[in-house]
Length: 203
Image 1 (cartoon, one colour):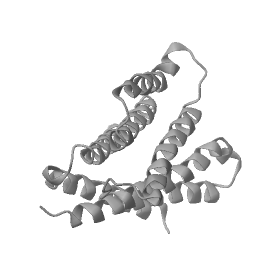
Image 2 (cartoon, rainbow, N blue to C red):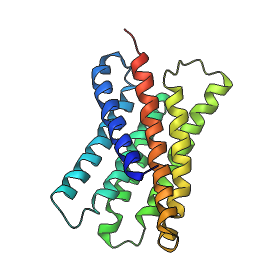
Image 3 (cartoon, one colour):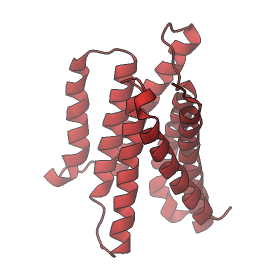
């Protein structure tokens, strides 16, 4: 499949999940609203990225650490809320998010791709714990279990993708395109799961 088709599909599903999230926002609990905040954030990042490309801005690398930190903070806070974790957990989470954003501006040698791997692994742990709780028979109703499962799968694969990212330059363009196509396709699965669950919500 052409990578451009996957990207168009990804963008369309992101937009549709955003619109549905806004329409169904009042039907969501305070915990579930963080799924919508997550989509809003991703839409802003994607939209900003495309605007900068449209206006031919040469350096848009500053968006990447913002994307890493924002995604990490929103999803971590989402799962904290779902599991009723203490607000004190916000302190290390906030410090981690700020570190991921600012490390490169203070001359630290941390690579953004490794920061992405670390943040993804933490997200995988949160989502995996949620799935384990459901298997054990959690008393809390989880209407977005399918979304949690897709998040767990997507970020698990992303960990592998970003680990091998530095090797993409030495492999064929076809294989590199295939890897990023799979990554975009899996994120489309997350958006699709959100769309499905939002469409099924009723008053």
